[in-house]
Image 1 (spheres, rainbow, N blue to C red):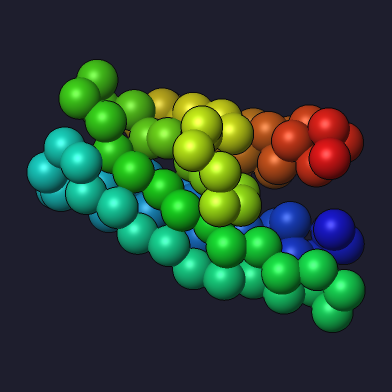
Image 2: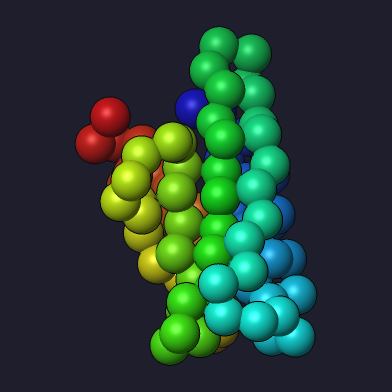
Length: 86
């Protein structure tokens, strides 16, 4: 994944967390990001603990969790760590 795509995903997730403050538990949103070689269907869901589960692909188990106070830079790091495990 190139840096631009990673930053676009992180920015989108950061924005979704901000919007999630006013959403119900269980609400979900997704978007598709393409870096020219790979496509990533990123899904985010607000859970009952006011945390956000993130799926970077279509798997049953979330790839990582974001909290309300997570910075965009930490989201970028989480994406990098996830990508290294592929």
